[in-house]
Image (cartoon, rainbow, N blue to C red):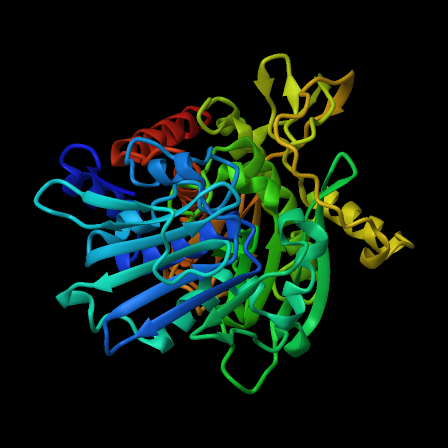
Length: 508
């Protein structure tokens, strides 16, 4: 039995709108989405096949497959069988993206309840497709198989080398021999392991941790419960690393971002890391290419992961250690700057201090005081205390429970307790002739680049104080704009800068 239908109205425009959400070509986005969907379907084996002669790309998995209702929604641009925050392929739009560059897309699926396939393509502004129920051209097991028949302009786009590169960049934790062994223990759906294949051959890479110096495992805890864990290290191999440098921030084995957590370490191109945080799936953007700035879970995770990273960098002398308040010759400037920030509601969170009543942290790490969230900032003294606490701890990482708690929507109530909310922006100097920036801000400390020509000129012309205030102002504003959930307007930057210096002038 078969039937013919079409997907919505002016589908061509909808498909192009979906494509615009991604920072890379639709050919790549399609591949990543199809692999992500296979992982969400509890697949243990995902095989990508590339046939240059016949201009085809196939993604086949042994997951749970789709039932009849899910398969119908699969072709509907207004519906999805997944809810946001339940998987890394929640948008379910791999095949929809493929309509941009394929002559047609054939999807076969087999589940416990149903089996069938469809042939789908763009025609004008419509996307007609034909469904064949209870028939399968080639799939002989439970799961899903998507065959992309490449259009003329895409026939030469793919190569085995390119496919492998993108799998490494986006799914490396499931390819690295050391990391992938840990996933069955931390994510239930991967209890039988996951294997990525290219043309039937497993993509497996020697454990990168074996080539890292200063290797250190880390974890992020909230209410004494492990929410994320991973490691940091400095690459010492003679060969080229298999992946770009940076800390891989991951959910379910998908690399969402590579970052240095707002730090600017020396030899950053040699620093590698991995942090798996499944509970952050609700803070991931539609294209799974970044986290949603301003999201409570993400902001709490970021601060705690950054603290761990900072301690590791300082321990291995990869960044300057932030001075104690009493030892900083910027103490007077810090006091004045934080007083200005306290007068600016837009930036007052960076100058938070004092004592107040607040409930304990909820399971997501968000501090609730009535209806208002309070952002906790750790200063240099607290970082030092944290490091000392780690040195005194007798329990190693391996001895700690590694179960990641992934239940969303846990209770957000707690006992009222007095809390000391510390903070304030601190200033640190560092000579970095490898950077063009005058300064940078990591959320607690503004680092002034004393190797920058502007700093030297300001110091020689007795304008250093103004230079310091300017650098702090612009660095904090830049940090604030980057962490907004919406794209900031340039006028916001100017308005904040004017307000800051107006308040600074009034204090003279």
